[in-house]
Image (tube, rainbow, N blue to C red; front, side, top):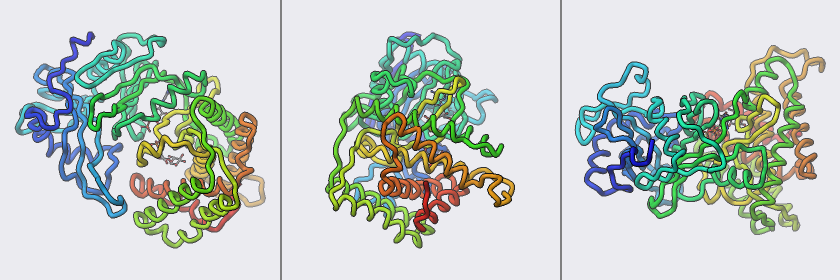
Length: 485
Ligand SMILES: Nc1ncnc2c1ncn2[C@@H]1O[C@H](COP(=O)(O)OP(=O)(O)O)[C@@H](O)[C@H]1O
Ligand SMILES: O=P(O)(O)O[C@H]1O[C@H](CO)[C@@H](O[C@H]2O[C@H](CO)[C@@H](O)[C@H](O)[C@H]2O)[C@H](O)[C@H]1O
């Protein structure tokens, strides 16, 4: 499809235009009900009290047989005491809405509703990504570098993107939404949108330029320009699809269930992590963290702990002991220790690692912790933070597979043995490539593992309460200062 065939009717950033507000008013009651049910909705547990339209673009005309609306919508919610001082404008979400007269039965699960009034009155509105046709429009727009209103579709011309690749929506649990095209490319559409350079595009582009093969090189990307406050929004990234790849989490659970160890893969993962870190340190600035910076880092960890205690009160009894892990780091800084910081992945765990059928590992999803401000996610940090994320993940895996009771005579490895072996192998692999074994800095590692476990407690309480016992078990061990490596 040519750019001309993609129709743009609404002016971009239609916050105050008559069409824009009429459109949102008609969608408001439907979105209030539908949005909080989505896996990627970040404001769970608080009602949505209203919406503001940030931008609306008509990718296919809504009065045609099939309409496609691209919306950036700010959802307003009551502010939590833990959110600190404002302003709190509400989270901005990217929505792709299909519009038809009636939904064919195969699209029934995608239904959002039928607006009673406004420009869409009498039509059926649904989640467009379930529908192949709108998904095709997105790929075609990337392929042809279309510009529609303020939407800018870009691509790397060195990668061949064939026309007509068949789309399918990824149904796995994720924080955003992804579409696979013909088992060749995968398009991740970010859901909670923040202005500015998004590391999910920035870091894979940087690594591709560095020739690092551990990350699929972006083939296309979608931006919104001129969105307030005048910084582009990164809305999506197209990357080569690693066909037949399995993620580290699936593989680890499979091996655990069979009673097999995972040390060889853990070592390969350590090597892959170090390759990525080494390339990032080459390409982007590194800084030295001295006493002052360390104090800020430790303050951040401590503050996150305090907020977590308020949000998830079962943490409270462990808080004093957990604080000592952070204080020990501050003590080292006070003695004059310094650390190097660089750009890192920021939310590394087994689910972010894909093993191709040939055994090669790739890292994906460089968005960082989605709940953190973008500026914080893009700050140089010690590599120990990513390492700690992976170490936590081996622990998560070992606690997630129900196993028959083990004899206790050492003949069958316990979950703890399994995780310990993975941890050691991962650190050895990391050291083989980087020349630096993360275990030689146990205070830093412990502080980051504690910080991560605290994050996980909040994450699980909010998104998957059944999983809460997994990070809580780690919290108990970290608080008891048990040897983790
Ligand atoms: N390049 C890729 N090749 C194959 N599968 C991928 C690729 N990138 C992501 N995936 C799969 O897509 C899903 C979502 O990817 P991810 O980037 O982690 O999204 P999110 O940030 O929404 O969690 C994961 O299940 C992952 O395994
Ligand atoms: O992959 P995302 O960017 O969506 O990351 C978030 O969700 C993860 C869960 O899907 C969560 O990871 C936690 O659970 C994993 C098992 O499902 C485990 O491997 C990780 O170690 C654990 O942290 C992640 O923290 C969150 O940011």
